[in-house]
Image 1 (spheres, rainbow, N blue to C red):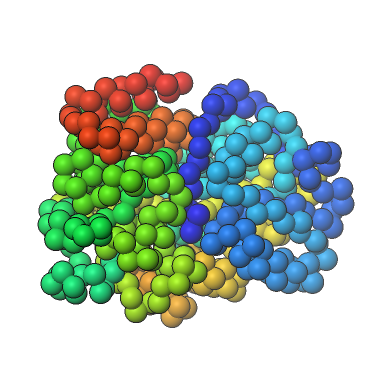
Image 2 (cartoon, helix red, strand yellow):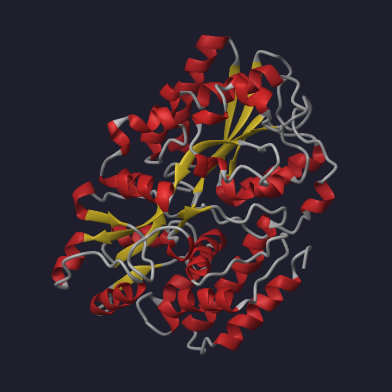
Length: 438
């Protein structure tokens, strides 16, 4: 969802249903798992500005764990473009790491493979108990009513970031709170080679995050209560059209953004080419791109009423990273001890400060570092107005199918083709036909 979970998942053609009986990970051959109980392999997701940044953040903590426990952790930072396919391959081959990071939206899909260690009461007890974690973060760890397939590691939420100088130059005194205000603000700025809002039309996950939230605001979801895909409801169609219309009709997003992939909208924002961007936990990335903290502001993402909350006032998905264990690892005790270390109060403060994310562990949130300009809005959003993406087995296919439909609609808009309710519904119907549970 990179900085911190802005992942372009990519086309996932492997059916998770085929992996349902697999037991992945933990093999000592080929895949890089451990030969010794004093060694673990760990696939970390790319959270920082680069893989090298992640290594600099994580290696000192892994060294600390080895010093405390005698267990060496072999680290591989996996780019988001590869991560899901790598994990799916591991679930079917049996050759993977002992411990890994997963995007929290994939929890139910990967749970369905049967390859991940269930976090039942006994396993939660090994890491201090389920009650240590924030409820909203636990809501994205697997199917409701089942033992979680992972535990929360980093929490994130979407917010509206804005360029203070570009707002001042346009005579704008406050960030928009409603979509109408955002469009009005964007139109004032979208001239002379500058644009009101940045987007990433080729970033499938980002597309999903935006239209999921807009669907909530239209009183809709992309799945029925029993987990069946429902992509062509009136609210879902309206949500996708509203998002694409920011380029097609409102013309506050540059047509070139239809081809943008991971982090390209952030680069434009940092360079002063666009005045606003809807993103999750972006402060650390801005800094690496040369933008000073006093150059940008942050506000809750817009809702129709201007007042974020639950239901139709939802303004973010519950973003974040979870930590999972392959259940056939030959070092369950070491793996759970490592999860305990990474989710401990002290490490949660260190790691989430480094990445600009919010600790999903309650006690760690009391640190003043998580009540700054960069984090206060995110904390409030996670506590009051964020909702988890559907925790269904076909969620990863949903990201690919609907994310691609939105990508194609952005391409239509960029090429001057009219985007209508009918054309949106047609694309979403095609996406639904690609779902295994249609």
